[in-house]
Each structure stands twice: as C-alpha cells, then as structure tokens.
Length: 273
Image (cartoon, rainbow, N blue to C red):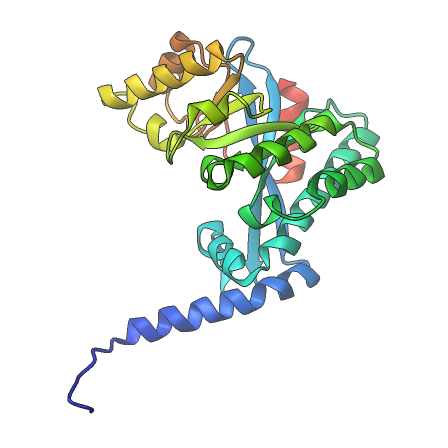
C-alpha cells in the first residue's frame, strides 16, 4: 500500500513478543521471588586462595524458564527497571554476606555491578552506605564494579561519584577494561583499586599475540598506577600460566569454578578461603 512494500517474517513477531514479555515481567519477578544470585569465585594467583566472588543475577521465569542476563539486563535498562533490580542485587548480596557471617564462615568480599542508571542516581553513596550499615557488614566486604563505558560517559561526574563512594569506604573496580574508550588521564584520578581484564582478551591468549600484548600492557600499566588486576573468563591452564607469568593478581573463570549457588559457594569458600 501507499506505493511501498514491507517484508515480514514470523520470527520478527516472535522476537518482539518475547522482548515485550520479558520486559514486562522483570518487575513481577522482583515481587514473586523469581530472581536469585549465584557467586563465581575469585582467586589469588600468588596463593591460590579464595579472595572474593562476583555476584551474578539469574532469573527463572515461570513460563519461559531460565532467561539469560544478556537478554533481560538491556531490557531492564531501557525500561528503568534496572534501578529496583540493582537495589535488590546489592541488598541480597549483603543479606547473604550477613548470613555467612552469622554462621561463622570465612568471609570474602563480594563484587556487584553498578548499572549506568544506578551510577547517576542522586545520593548514591549515602544510600549504599545506609544499606551496608543496616546489614551490619564492614564496608570493605562489598566491592562495586563499574564498567569502563559508564565511567567514561561523563568522566568529571564519575570522578565525583567514585570519590564519594570511596570516602564512604567502598572498594571500586573498573570492569571490562580496554573494551571501550579509555582516558588514562581520568583513570589515574579515579579512586579505584582494581582493573578487570575483559574475557574477550583472555579467551584467545593461547594463540593470539595481539591479546597477549594487550593483557601484558594492562597488567603493567595497572601495577604502575598501584592497581590490582583480575582476569575474567579464565578457562585453561595455559591462560592461567600466562597471566601468572605477567604478574596478574587475581582470576575468575571456569578453570576454577562456574558461578555457584549460595550453598555450593559455601563449600568452596570453606575449602579455599
């Protein structure tokens, strides 16, 4: 019609319908206990001991089954649902830490990711400080991960927010380092203590000289700035040995463990902490 034509395929409609279902179901998931956290161990390369865990969100939809964060997190960001979702993740991580402490288990820090919308919320540092105080946990037990893209979107504002969080006692790290636009002049001014080497650089370490050079450079630069490095996505002994030879401080990945349910992480924690 109207002297034009359009193509249509059934999978387009299916994709749109699923996106709508997933997007509209996120807030429902919060109130109906469909969400849970799993914990991927982070280990010291020098001692082999457990030093932390990254808390990762999982969603079991009653009809669609398990939905990947790769699918629902972007939709939550578009709808604004990422704000209550992020609040739930932080409070649940603190609740789990408090439960482990009450049971006398050896505690390690837990890292949670701050979304772009969370990061620009007014009074973020004070709000997070209140949640931690209410949980009864030391501030150093909760690590906040901030993606490089979020930090560099507005570096001046990011510097102020990061400084406010740091002054409250939070430990901050830059996630996915090297995958976006980096400004070393701002990086040196951020009150962060750790850089996370993205798994896209780790994946082909065994046979890609470019990835080897990038990882080596990130580690050397981080150490020259007094920062800790952690590599994610470590799956093989060869990757591990390369990272160890370059002086990487910490690692996480399937070589040691997949993300674990809370009760399974307890067993891992007792054995490796």
